[in-house]
Image (cartoon, rainbow, N blue to C red; front, top):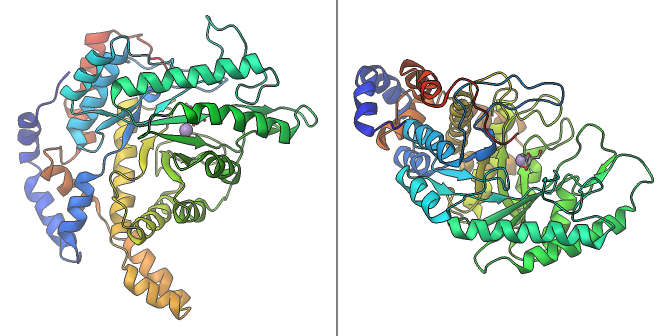
Length: 424
Ligand code: LRH
Ligand code: MN
């Protein structure tokens, strides 16, 4: 299902005058307006290939309809999102959930939707039918060298898949850890995991990166072998300059100050990028900005300040990816909402008067510091984000247009009612 720019332009016509009014109102107060718009236009967020169908919990999964049946249809769905918001110009594949049978054909198809391949993800947290050794007691940490070798070989195979698609990074998330005290020697597990990661690191092409994703817990876990940013940073700093720490917003203990972690990882040039989502308690993988939009703003505030301090390119120097799971929403509507929330938080952060903030911090004017931050956070930037979309040929209101055009109904007609996508 293709949405061409002409159709979107036609659909925008009836919304233009209202948009123009709110944009001019907001733009009036924005000092560096063109810079802000250019940055928003350039900012692209990768869609996870594993989140284009309905997810579930260990207790139940309530399937959606018209879900993509293969990688080609997943690319078409990401192409749809990108046509609507012009901010979803990449996909992040999870192997083996989405193995490209013909990499060249898949790469060409993605290019026809203006989609690039972001980081590829390995999977040593599930046993595949053809697998010789089980990951029941872990993978890269496993006490049995044969299991570790199997997991290392899988990661090296995933790198090869990524190279064929033009990806430049491997994300490693490990469900390795223990369920009970005494089950695991922490130092032994760390050292085995490190040795395994060293072999994977050695297989990286010269211009590739490896993202070490940490996670505090899953139900049933007593410890995880990459349990927090410190452990991931330890691996990344010992592995070498191509290794970085990936921050999945849902992978923290409650009330963790994630924006402080982000600031310090950037200071150390060890921030890989993000898996954006939101959560109330555990790794809920909810719509970005649906629970704690202020935290998302504070994270982007640190990102903009930190990237500008190092002269980094906002759009290309970090990995911007979503990692979500859709249990009760249409996956495409959920992803459209998540992209919008990320663009809004980024736009708000671009409006922070950093010069005034530094001056207030220098004199410990705590009240003024908060006022400067919250003035940006309380600015309604939706028309700035919409203007950036308009400039890129996107829809002024992507979600409304998705509904107006009954896209899900069309996908069901095309694919059938009960199709199930691979992934979470
Ligand atoms: C683990 C995780 C990881 C993926 C998986 C789908 O919770 O965040 O990034 O491999 O979700
Ligand atoms: Mn993740």
